[in-house]
Amino acid sequence: MPAKPKLGQNFLVDAQAAQRIVAGLGDLSSRTVVEIGPGRGAITGALAARAARVFAIEFDRDLAAGLFERFETERVTVVEQDVLQFDFAEAAERAGQRLCVAGNLPYYITSPIVLKLAKSHAALDLAVLMVQREVAERITAAPGSRDYGLLSVTAQMYGAVESLFTLPPSAFSPRPQVESTVFRWRFAPRFAELGIDEAGFLRFLRQAFAQKRKTLANNLRAAGATPGDAAAALASTGIDAQARAEAVSIEALASLWRRLH
Ligand code: SAM
Image (cartoon, rainbow, N blue to C red; front, side):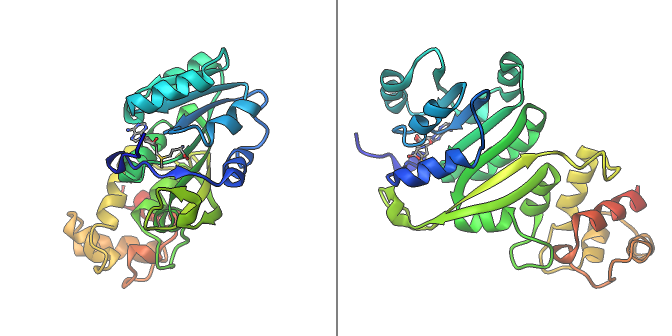
């Protein structure tokens, strides 16, 4: 069956890479793993060999049927569904544990999947995900680096992220036009620790990073803060008046939010 580019179908043909993705989740002997987009089963086989329980969520009906034939057992359940509709909270409750997540993501919906996982954080323990290299660089970036921005802070608010390894286009069939990077995300939200309200802080981040070329102070003013309030809040939290949000750490953004609220 030919791959469907519209569904982001670039199948992993590097068996060792599939093993490394699964190994990135650690000991799975008592764990329930949700695989996003199992496709032709490159990662599913390695998961089935190691995990106590696997839910493989595939949107493509033909591929889901093939996976069902090949993998469905008491321990492996193939679910034909859009992962954006999958209820991680319910699956975690049924499993009686927080879930592990694995996946070579369909790149056309990387951001919605990352945001969905962030929202589902209470049901999740650990994820090892393959995304386009540039996206992984943004997710794992440190303040002040070229790639640090809204996506970095948002992901990192929900837990520690680290890049594991990068694969060339030749690791896939058909070959994508980009390199791919696998990263690990250990869910441990920082909202309580930093004394901030989740929804309010996420709204604030969208304002702080609204315009990349503007300073943080200007973005705050555009969002309704008076120039005096913005300047005073920056000064009292030790952030340079001319700083752009891209240079400011999560901790400093959190103290700024506390100061403004
Ligand atoms: N895991 C396989 C591998 O590594 O070879 C396939 C990875 S491929 C990059 C992405 C997979 O996600 C495809 O099988 C595609 O059909 C599936 N997919 C696309 N959109 C999806 C969605 N909304 N929900 C679940 N799976 C989806």
